[in-house]
Length: 632
Image (tube, rainbow, N blue to C red; front, top):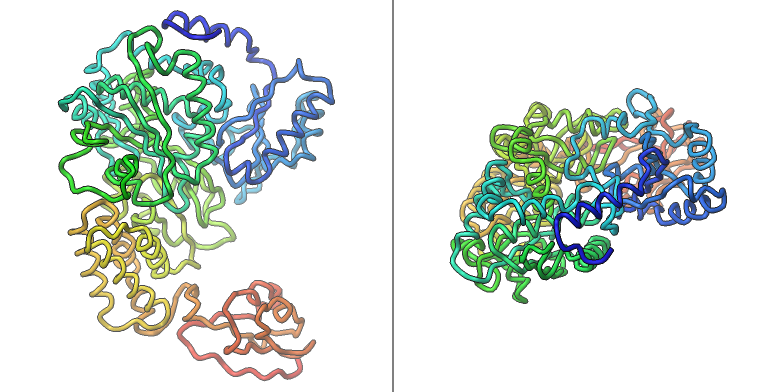
């Protein structure tokens, strides 16, 4: 089939696609998101193709590469439908056994199953793995089922039904009203009501209007938008077109960061196929509605995640924020009314239109509806992308889905909201994850970054790390942000180097509050959050760094020393062989000694020392004893 000219033809094409797919026929899906590609998904794909042909089962089994499944640390991931059998960390050499055992004989390959790090229990079905079991994947759900480059796959999961409904059954006012009634709030960080934002743009005077997708995701450790764009670009395009129809726009832009080549590639294919079938371009579905979209690759500036900076960059100007008002909804791209939302927000729109505002608003909390995608990373057993209803607790996300902290370590803090977010301690783990509750706790939702920290994490150093990032990424346009962040970073760096002074804490507090209250854009206004939240919840760590030149977490290199306990050292030489700086001396069966002048504090000796000996100690804030290399 070529061009689709009406909703009837669209539905006919969908039925034709479904009629050719046997739901009982085994279908092997292979995650081909960026994370799985990095761990060898491409080689697994080649092995699957060869093995299916070699074993002569091309007619008995179908095979599909898909977007990100979310459980990124366990990739490459293979799921076999209709049963939902899930195999993790699959390598090319595993494929022959998967085909012969699971496909042909309906047997499970035990060694490829998920093993719970806490209980040791194995799960053979995707739905039984705790990481997936406790999620509600409304936006990410299609990622594991469809090939992101296949329009047919997207149509098979109700793709473009929302667009057809919008164009032929709803007025622009009704579309905006539905989004308002759903109480969808922007997923880019600010949480502004999407329907209200759309209404501003729709009512703004002017014949030329624009819609823009913000895919300039720059938070360290965050990749929610990337995975949605890579895994289901058709949904983002469909949401964008519905928004364009609602506000009266005929042109759109997708702003994608330079570091997302796969997202750009899959998006380009989706645009090409949508145009071919008449689902993008002139007279879409015979409705008379025209819409075109262009892709713009950003240069990697974090500040361009802020919407006015992004629009300036689109126009070819430096990526710097504008003072507001006027807001982009009334004066945006090239001075025209512009509606800009992030990837996840646009991907929610088809769901809202298809399922209705009542369905969507029934999920979540009173003021935060629907689900939210988080990138759960750091000191947690199960890292990856997590989609949960608004209102889920931090404890449930970290311990039920994330599987808790590895290696028996103690949970210390979780940072939410990206580099401008706040760090929350253990006593706030029952905080509900929504826009309002996280803000009350001193953190924020942000775009969805969530970094877990254990007992070995220094919160002073964490604040320093994020301030260093934000100092580099500040555009420098306004003095409070440029100088405020720089001066806070200087104080924090001194603290972690053992040069903290009395009065630093009070000065930090004052600088943070001034920067927050007087910066022009959200980067400067939220940059002090890591400082303010750690000062509030972990003040004792700051005091230890200043008053005792001690790092309680034993993490700040300039405040620690490595010492070999003569009562425990067996003279095995493991530490000596591991030391890259030749800082350890000692003969076999004699006590080894660390030369503090040569030691680079790399921790190699500590990690190399056999657990049975436990001879290497890390000291902070106390003198290093003098050891003599005598006989053991």
